[in-house]
Length: 192
Ligand SMILES: Nc1nc2c(ncn2[C@@H]2O[C@H](COP(=O)(O)OP(=O)(O)O)[C@@H](O)[C@H]2O)c(=O)[nH]1
Ligand SMILES: [Mg+2]
Image (cartoon, rainbow, N blue to C red; front, side, top):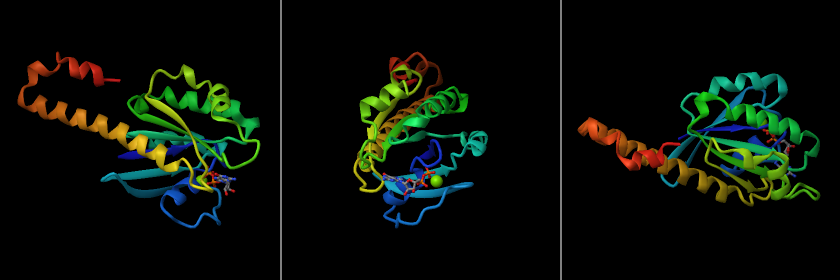
């Protein structure tokens, strides 16, 4: 599975990935290019691209879109000042044609910080309810404590695995019997 970690700079993308990989999270510097990490979850290999989110680096995000199965959008829940910026970047991202089939996990990170926005506040501030183009979920978490990370990632892997499974079935059947499958109602249901 090819997974893209995106979000504004300082959201905690790199810290989350290190935590998921049981690495030391005490010494992390801003990501200027990108990191690649491979995680194994539920028997699937996740190739994760962690791309720098500074304003000057955002135009380069598009270089990573091809063949992406899932986007993990990481939000700094304590950064109230930049929620609008965050919403605009996310909405722009979801318009990208090459990400049309990708599953979206939004991590409301830094929940350990006092005064951080709640799940409901994040949902409103980012206008998540308006997202109908993608399968999505918003999940509270803390990269520091690790709380919520596994739940979010498990949902993501299940979602993507389900889609890959049905697509695999579809292409296998297509090779056997090309004409009938396109009319099949199952195919209608799984096409996003
Ligand atoms: N309190 C708190 N700080 C966090 C958390 N996750 C990341 N940070 C801090 O936020 C800053 C940015 O983290 P980083 O992983 O570099 O963000 P990135 O730019 O999205 O990759 C660092 O100082 C981290 O230590 C979290 O869950 N809680
Ligand atoms: Mg980083």
